[in-house]
Length: 270
Image (cartoon, rainbow, N blue to C red; front, top):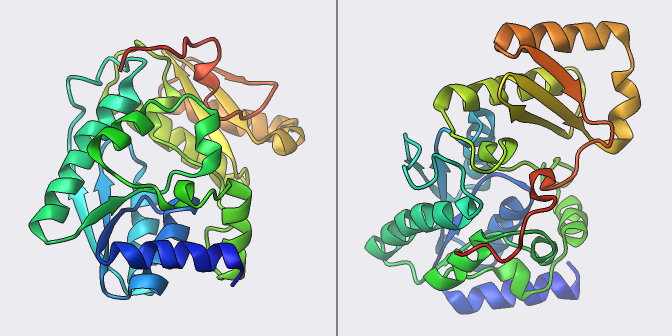
């Protein structure tokens, strides 16, 4: 297993009875597997279903937890809270407060001792105000505490035969809109449909950045050459116009984590 993984299991065993905030991504999948190995039936996964989380990601999360044989609950949040509907710069902080308070409430009701999330060491390198909310709420991050990097998580996930070991990174759909932009359910659906279409053409890492009536597509840097096909360009352009965009463009630099954070002040009030 490796000494680091054994150390993570020992850390989790000490927590005795925990809830994992489970998105179905690389980090939370690895953490849930480790928690199952460490605690058996004393772990529960809770997934949040909301307009800013793609439906396909919820479906994948539900499917994986069934296979792992872990208790699972999906909590539906069928709205965009007024505090974040304008997509403020501290949106992630506000959203984590809303979401994790619901998870903590459920965990307390059922006698779980800790709520955990999948934050890892690399997450500390980007603008992540949500991490402040987690700390304030007492949520623990076992992967961060164990100094796991994303690369280490992927490698260990491969050893454990987890299907997410090479899954591209995804994030809340609200990250696709510029800060201080009014968010609507219709816009989020357009973004999700557009990204799903481009992914279906064989692109793994895709972001559709929403700029009003203009869609800016980012694909993984090593996939950019695949875009230079008249047939592909026509397919993508026609589909996104059908979805509702007037203009379609591609970011020549490709996908970068948190590209809307470029130039953002890091001292935003929480």
